[in-house]
Image (tube, rainbow over all chains, first blue to last red; front, side, top):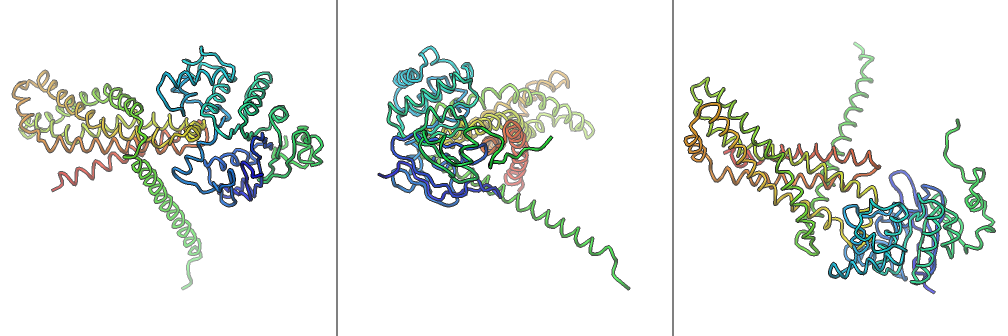
Length: 252
Length: 271
């Protein structure tokens, strides 16, 4: 079966710093893939390369078997239109009301778009009473849900989630995780999530890949993560300071 | 005679200075190239849809209408001060009667557009850089892209077009208020005859002066919006980065306004 998204030997440097050193990854259609890894290991860069927001230096990125690595102009716009994305901070437009944020990419008259926005808000558990509020009037969890409603509003084929539970309390984080899992399953969407929150991983993932020093060092089913037999994965999953992953911290 | 022992040190210092100078020159050309590329990217979208008329109207209101008080006050105060100075200077040569003529030429040709441009740059270029810079560092610009919206069309082009369209109107009002400031001071403080002052003003005000003033204003508007958007669009590094972008936008807009004013003045009035 052709992978929905496939990365082969993707590299990306910023100046002297190599962020991606040859990423190989396949995501099957309808699969929920979660990439784990510490801060600065290139998770967001991987996602932005697939989206076409960054251009890789080497390697090939394919979506449905078609090479999308070097798309430009309208072809790039058409490629990006297949994706929905939940950004780490929500990235809601502060100058627009909630319903205008949610319906931003939708065509049609204002009344139709408002109705569609309220439908999508309902999918993420928000009522029509928030539709006319500004994002700054919402709590962090509600902003994440509005951002999620915006990401799914145009019914994308593929959804990306960038650290979906960062900054949320454990209960709200679980609400978001359940929402993501439900949406991905119900809408039969291929999903890629990047996170270092293991509770999210266990709730959202069908498969997990670990990114370390710019390479995928392990991938497997979510159920196999505790028995991966990889010391890097083991250290990360259990959140231990001791192990092969060395954090750059200064001794007191 | 043997060579001075300091020579190798001087050569090394000179070499380092030349290397540093070369780095600055290369950096300057790089910046100009990036700015030209940004401007070309924006202008290439000028005639192809989609367009965002609501964004354009909002920016025209923000740049034009909301800048009117500060530009108007600047013009009135400057026109009055100019008339006073011309009166003092002219009196030394028995030429105090030149106040209306010199005031209107000075205001319309130079001070109206330049001071208006600088005031709008201080107000608008900084606001644009701060707003777009914040959108950049909070990933709102990336979000626009994933929502099938070209950030250049949605954010940059409406601001550039709005600035180019409203700046001439703003400067036209500024010129009128500047002349009025001179007239007020001349009639109420310097005992000029009101009708005679206005007659002389009208006599010395040429169409070419007004046209050059508006052309300057349009050019200044382009640079103000371009600098605000460019520095905001390329900001990075959180709040500090947005702060740097804001400062750079205002400083570079000031420099470009003064430089382009000199070039236009030399071209139009130099001969």
